[in-house]
Length: 425
Image (cartoon, rainbow, N blue to C red):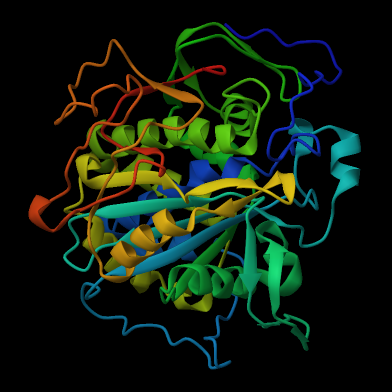
């Protein structure tokens, strides 16, 4: 049962946390939910037939053109047959309130931000060349990075900089700039990208009949209007939106804790989509795909619905045991405690694994807002590292012999793991 709290903002504890300089955005945190949505869309496209696919695609917004680091247009692949090789796709969400919110956001919040906004949530989806594993990487919004020169949508170019906050990439040069920045960070080539509005969270959670999440501790966050008891909760509509928005109610109140909370939600969504009968229900698949695409701005490389089909075929053989959700490794910025910087050694291992198309295995703990579900019905394939009760089991993707074991400073979880959201540990 959910009780609506009275209006007002809950104060912090006085401890400086990453991302606590500004209040929780009504849209900034929802887009992690849609990371698996991208998988849903392409799998749906491969499942519901060509007519439905074209209908879904017709709901999408005008496309964005991507360019490479030399300014040349990125070409779309041939639209015949199943896609060959791996796939790198970027998913980003903006904190803009322009034409967003309806009854789900406060008037003062809607007035606080408009236009293109910032990429407050950014995810990279990597599908391996053999189509046997998926890695989903979340990039903290407060990460300080070097940014390349970016062509602006309206003409002109934003200059390169050696240090800028990551979530400014979208406002500097649109979706294309976010892609170019992540390419610079990781060494990958990313031919596909999508920008998503938060209204899709509500529509998609309704289409799937809600997402069941586990709460190890009560979740009370007056900033998003949630007051949930500990235990199992089925969330949809505005509650699903509020859950993935929540920052003060889970973890340590930081953006990094919110990333972890969203991984709990994502893994549950992935399990429901892949093992809960959704893939066997064409009507539900179609509704889910249409709800997502209707709230996306796609790059022109994704605009052809046949491309969605070919990517969907690549995902057919990937199960939740071979899906890894992780946070890009960061630590506090010595120059500013409200910013983070990459842990260079760990980032190099992760980047090299992605570039080399290697499946990855987590050896560190689950995120700071998650704990392993003690009542989980599915046992992990391998035990957690000794001495770390909240560590993620090293469930090896297939083939295990080629998997890269990531440093323990990289947190996250396998999508097959059952985890619970929790207040600060």
